Length: 369
Image (cartoon, rainbow, N blue to C red; front, side, top):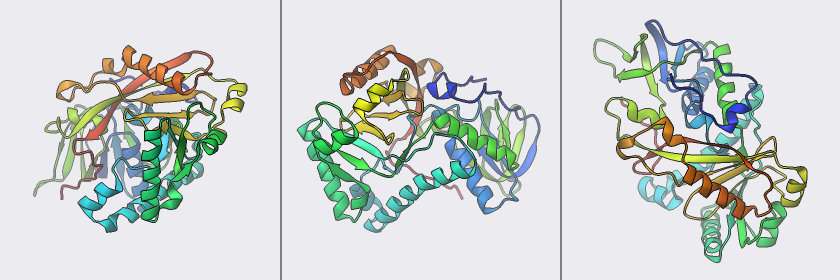
């Protein structure tokens, strides 16, 4: 059994997490989903929206939200990790605009879903600020804004002068910033756990503490199936939504690179700090350094802040001990205090975990038939 992570997000849940029963029988269903994170649960929700009669089973090795979905930086973002130039070169210029529109809609759709489903996930669409803290960073960001405008996406990314940026976030040393409106701050653990609860209410069977030993494709004589110690689930369709933990399944050790990202959170900060600093719309934030950082103002007025810096572990290794790295935590705190020199108080939480990085750096959805 994998116990829930010790992240700050999990402490905000309304009560202790009690795992749902493990799979203990053989089942025949329409759709079997492996993985109880955002990908798996949103797939189940979308399928139910299209056909409420579907029998859907979700199987999770720990509890829903155990992986990256319950530990991340809490950005629901339309920002895409691949440049428009790369997309156009690989897939054609005509694919770029539809992707932008789909990503923008996805943020709004999540907001509508949590509102309609009654999930208190601290959703607030305040946009994203990406700070330029050097002239080189300012030039890079202005180039992005210019390219967006040339492609007809000028409303998706705006350049803010240093004075305009400080009206939103009064930080020292700013050369300017970009503002992207299509991003929302969320509490990821509350959203993912809420999605699971609503799916159960709608008839989806979720089995937790169930480790899948194998996923077998359909043959001419039987349907696709997932195999666990407690039972086998046969289905017309199997969805593998296992993110970084895909590497633990047979034949998939190199399917993705499990990359660790670590986070820290401050104590709740006084109103005087926020009055002086800004972030009145709860904008998520980063800067344009090459080493990725990300942050947000939480619902209880902390700063949740994370970034890269933890090493890749040889052989796609994933271990609970890798979730904590004192050197990386110290680096994150130093970076945070450099951004916010007037930051009061102490760091109250430290946590981390693996996420799936495609080895070609390109997000994708694959179908085997």
